[in-house]
Length: 297
Ligand code: NDP
Image 1 (cartoon, rainbow, N blue to C red):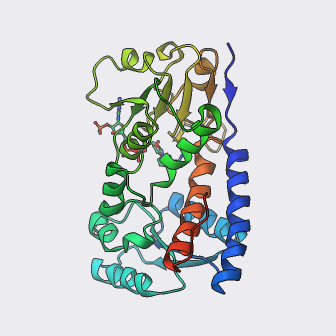
Image 2: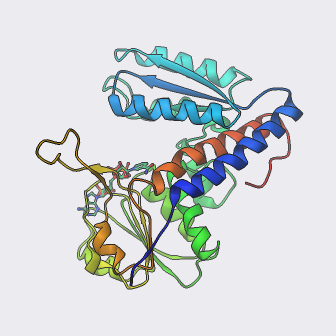
Image 3: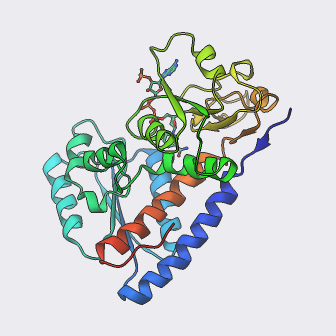
């Protein structure tokens, strides 16, 4: 079997286009554009790339992007003051503080300071709780993007299917498991203490790998025909003479492709969906914060 390669780039482009059109509708009704504020602290190269990409995508989706770049030695109270200002700013619908933060800053306290109504990353404990009890709230962008990709293939009801999520972080693994449970899958969460991981994964009709270990999941771990969502982004050491190593996921793609029914590539799978869902969440926040009926998206 050669698995279908799930085109996350194309799915993300479709979502961004819908969000962009709905943002124009919003602007007509509210007489302002939806706004996303992104706060970057320090000079981390990867974070700068992500923030730049988010800003461009926000503007391309007919929204305002407010970028705040603070020095690496910013103290906690200065960051909290900025978050408070953004919470109060009517032009700002979504607030995103780019993680990781420099060591003097307490990420949990910063996330807790963001108004849950503007928490478009879905990291606030109030939104995490809402997801856990099945109430409407902001869902973290990466797992929601994974669900959208799964939905295109399997629909929204995964009744009878076994799903294995590898990784239990608050931003990917745990919310992913909640979403799969809501979709009626039978869910197992595996992590670094799981024994016989290959056997656990072999039960799964749906595998979501969110670990951060290059090509850890091998082809012979997979049930034939399974759908594989690879969240991992890992850079391999460069080949001699080459500048940068290749990007790979947590799944050995070439091997997995021979066994799986469908698989997301890295790059071009989950990654593009993450930004598209961030824009989607910002649009939803704009409607909610303005008291307008939010569109079904
Ligand atoms: P974390 O480091 O927060 O979590 C990793 C998880 O993997 C932990 O739960 C850990 O278990 C588990 N783990 C570590 N080693 C093993 C192992 N040998 N076997 C089984 N489980 C293991 O990472 P994130 O959740 O933040 O990210 C995971 C990956 O996804 C990274 O590669 C990251 O770059 C990528 N990512 C991609 C995004 C995208 O847009 N495509 C967005 C966010 C993340 P334990 O809890 O026991 O330590």
